[in-house]
Image (cartoon, rainbow, N blue to C red; front, side, top):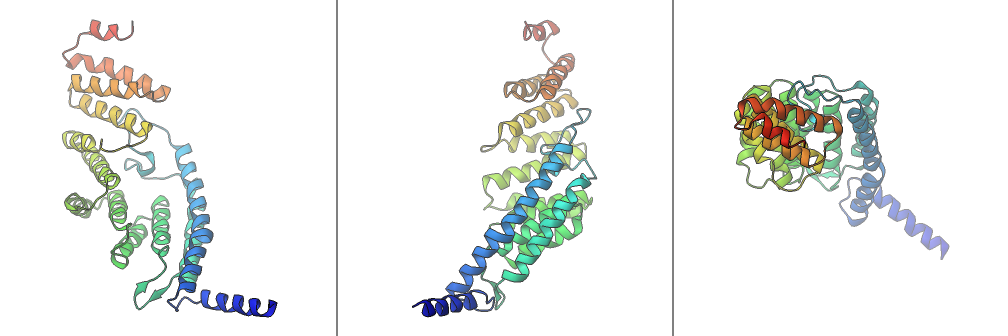
Length: 288
């Protein structure tokens, strides 16, 4: 009995280890191994790298703050302390792709391979290797047209094009995404956020305000929503629309952001009174 079990187990392993056989054993073996071994470990390295980027970020309230510091289009340099983590991400996903891709007749049978490519592209983005990131995102779009990562790849490649000042391509991508009908709510939100920061960078504050307001759809973390209201306040303040600026700063304050943002919101409110319909006395009532 033991001999038969060993033989059956050996057959399962032989079938499972093949990347050229499209059968139940092969697909499940390579999918499970790709997800719970290499991909999971790569995600952990990515998480640690992102934590380093977030911990090293310093807010600059002298300019319009970014919606998400992780995709900060104002900064040319990401903290290099995260590079080793991103290198590990790339190393791990490359191993997964080499060992577990089941590209049979130009059709990938392992549903986790596109996820590994996407993680690779993100790691390249965070390493500022924007051209390589774009190439990888474009590969996902071409190779896996039915993947749920296609729209995300368009979005991330557009961020990379903006980093490289490829404005024409970025605008073409954004126009395509605006016309795309199957975008999920979170994907629409991401497109509006990119458009917001793109127009902030070009000092077109009216268009930035338009798209930032559009991004206030669906659910999002309280921290992100308070940042958006604060940014709207900054944009209205730059346009000398004091009443609108004060409304947005009040919304940001009501969401209990950190001390620094709360302080800056109160300070900016006071500065916005001079070109609003409010009087200094009415503002003082807020603090009584």
